[in-house]
Amino acid sequence: MARKSAPVLLAYDGSKVSRAAVRHAAELFAGRPAVVATVWEPGLVAVQVGLADAMAAGALPVDPASVEAVDRAQREHATTVARDGAELARSAGLAAEPQAVPDQVDVADTLIDIARARGAAVVVVGSHGISGLRKRLLGSVSRKLVEHCDRPVLVIRDDAVKRD
Picture: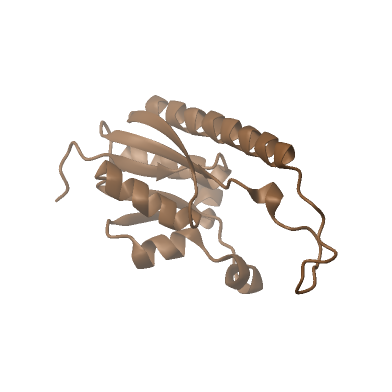
């Protein structure tokens, strides 16, 4: 059994399903410390727009100032979302702190790294229920966590939210 002092890691993006995941985690892990993690992706604006040939002809140039401005806005938004999630968790009975983190590889790997660094007892994540081609192209954070995380993972499914 996990130590009572080990925190619950809550993956939080502000969506309805992530809010439901916080509420479910608070019921299951009342009184525990919690880390509410919001992961943001730096450098998205730097992704080349349009289809470029092998020599990058046809790709639109990227303005470094624009990259910095968009990254700053994403970081500020993620910080606000994490704070809102921590407030929701505190109102539900968890001793929560926010953490906004830029992703280094992908969201799931970043969450796994946070869980290890913080000694999390469990990772709680909402599943948006993507399927088919979209799932193959984009992957699934919850699926990757279940398959690769060395901690227990609690997945709150989108269809569970509809019943709440």
